Image (cartoon, rainbow, N blue to C red; front, side, top):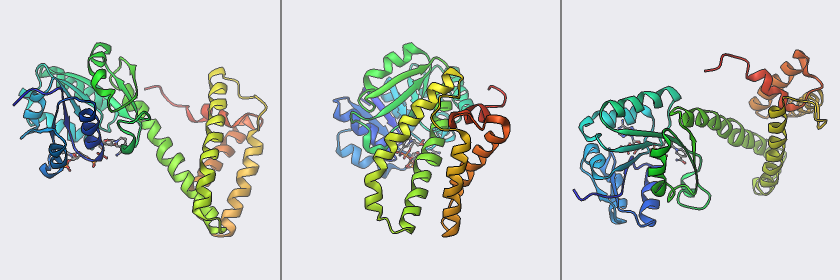
Length: 293
Ligand SMILES: NC(=O)c1ccc[n+]([C@@H]2O[C@H](COP(=O)([O-])OP(=O)(O)OC[C@H]3O[C@@H](n4cnc5c(N)ncnc54)[C@H](OP(=O)(O)O)[C@@H]3O)[C@@H](O)[C@H]2O)c1
């Protein structure tokens, strides 16, 4: 098989977007997917299709894995461990921090090199100037991979020498994404809908609301950094009262309010722990209690 610049293993929506971005940047690309039919559109776009995962790894010095999870990555690597020597694998699949350490060891035990990372963008942003990737692991390996990876993620950075750092960040960011960003916004949109506010109109207000949220987040970050939760914006007592109004309103009309309940629970705990006059950000102190991992 002719050597290519980069291999992409895993051609779901995200892996396919990576392969397309690499091709668009002029790189020669090999692809492999467990279900071969998913490789066909990439072949039509100019990628070489490997017959096996091992052949795919052998085809390029750099391989990007975009699979469902770490178990899938392990299964693919173990299908042909002899393909690893001299190859650099960048694993961007979802996984636990501990699994990144295990996969790094597996690669090293078989002569391969390993980086782990997190994709912080939707598929449609890959290859655009609004695509975010963070990578952890040895910096020299990152320096070797970044000229190719940048074609997929314009906002790419080396997070840490520690291989498990990207997955740790990813876990916490996924919490924001699923529980706050999407679920929270949709819970709110559903409430507005119950009151007859059309979703199209609600969505026009979602972006300014997101900007306000970002502003509040920046203020909270400054308070957490300073360890001073008395900046005079709004107290926990005020937030409790405001969220109680929302909860009562939602209850009264039978609207779903699980996330409002959860937030109110945190706010009341902070108030009862003696933080009634602290800012919202004092929740950080409440929630971070526990052993450092
Ligand atoms: N989609 C997004 O917007 C997005 C955003 C950020 C991060 N991500 C992450 O990117 C990764 C891929 O996401 P996706 O949206 O492309 O998901 P997907 O459609 O579920 O793709 C998963 C890929 O993994 C393969 N796979 C699963 N188990 C396997 C196994 N045991 N052996 C070999 N291949 C296996 C699938 O192969 P088959 O085709 O044969 O099933 C498919 O190619 C995930 O870790 C996801 O968390 C996605």
